[in-house]
Amino acid sequence: MNPLSISNAPRSLGRSSLRSSPLAYGCWRFAGTDVATARAKVEAALELGVTLFDHADIYGYGDDTQFGDAEALFGEVLAEAPELRDRMVIASKCGIIIGVPYDSSAAWITQAAEDSLRRLQVDVIDLYQIHRPDFLGHPAEIAEALTRLRSEGKIREVGVSNYSPSQVRALQAHLSFPIATVQPEFSCWRHHALRDGVLDQCLELQMTPLAWSPLGGGVIGLSPEEAEGRPDGARLASMLRVLDRIADEQGVSRTAVAMAWTMVHPAGVIPIIGTQRVERIQQCMDALKVEFTRTQWNEILVAAQGEPLP
Ligand SMILES: NC(=O)c1ccc[n+]([C@@H]2O[C@H](COP(=O)([O-])OP(=O)(O)OC[C@H]3O[C@@H](n4cnc5c(N)ncnc54)[C@H](OP(=O)(O)O)[C@@H]3O)[C@@H](O)[C@H]2O)c1
Image 1 (cartoon, rainbow, N blue to C red):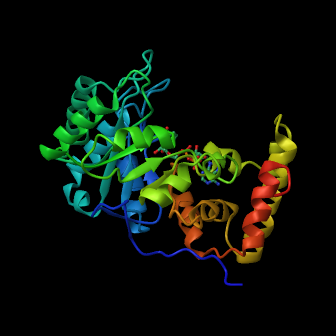
Image 2 (image 1 turned 45 degrees about the horizontal axis):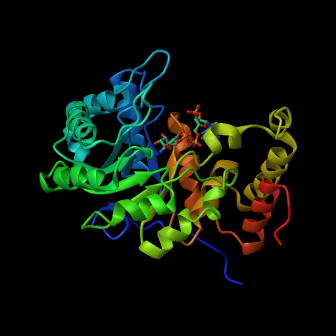
């Protein structure tokens, strides 16, 4: 049986002409440093071959930082080193407002895109995503706002995040161009996208899945002993031990194996790297070296779900 390997070649985002590296860099945790530190992370990611940078207007919202801070810091990096812009695909999102919490009205989408362009200090956002479904947002109105932004040259392509397959279909029905990407949570620990139709729909409609929190937001970085202290600890620790065994066999880190697990799915998943430590970006990129047998991939899934496959 042939092993499942991962191509390091750039890939198209959906049916669009945008091309991305096989892993992306996420800016959720990016705010809160000086510009030099931020620039070092962006340059390290680019040097390691990452070209897609995933933002949202809300990133930065936290104890010491605020809505918009991640984009603003990234914009300061680009202002200092404008030559970096041509080497990257910039993605951002709108639609979450603290306290509302979702607004996908045309007025908000339009204003949010303008605000992101200003903070990022760019003329165009390559991939503009609706961050979460707004049950009060009519897909025709969302489509109209996105279409206008696209025809004005303010965004290039459109994606959605945390949408169900039926929500994707409803929006796609009102767009005259294809949705390029979806962004579900997806990791070997949080693998519901395998069965809720999200990845199947990517295969059906040729959309690219961008996987958020591919290390489970950090739980895949815990030691098995730390994991055992959690309510779901026995199952988590068991999965971590399987990841560690495969990582040892392949001479890479557990991080690389976990990233690779998401990437061998035939939908062509692009995991979004979340670490803010430069030295860990390389560990994530080592996913490209991993080769799974089907048995190994399934063994990780079985350990994660705590029950055998039927
Ligand atoms: N669309 C959405 O709703 C949504 C939601 C969440 C995230 N996202 C996107 O997904 C991106 C990634 O999410 P995430 O930050 O949760 O990703 P993740 O890779 O699952 O988790 C990253 C976190 O794990 C920690 N970590 C612990 N051990 C690690 C190790 N060995 N290697 C790497 N990281 C380790 C990191 O800490 P250190 O920094 O100390 O390494 C960091 O805090 C975000 O930046 C954002 O672009 C989207």
